[in-house]
Length: 86
Image 1 (cartoon, rainbow, N blue to C red):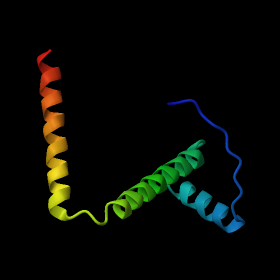
Image 2 (image 1 turned 45 degrees about the vertical axis):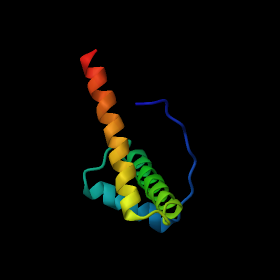
Image 3 (image 1 turned 90 degrees about the vertical axis):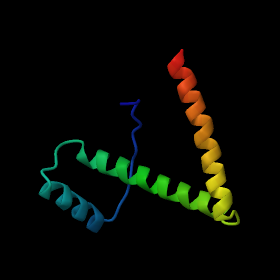
């Protein structure tokens, strides 16, 4: 695991009880709260990143997206097989 950062968070008592109850019903152990928060943050960052990319590319047509994907896949395949031959 990468170097850890320590956070101080404040949440409502209801949120705290709900989450700790959820973790306890799943056999929660020490560190599960941190894992839960990290996974939730990663999901939200990914969700917002995808949303931003979709908004940024909203004016690009489906055919153009398909062409861009195919071009990128072609380049990746060439690089992969070139590296595999080395």
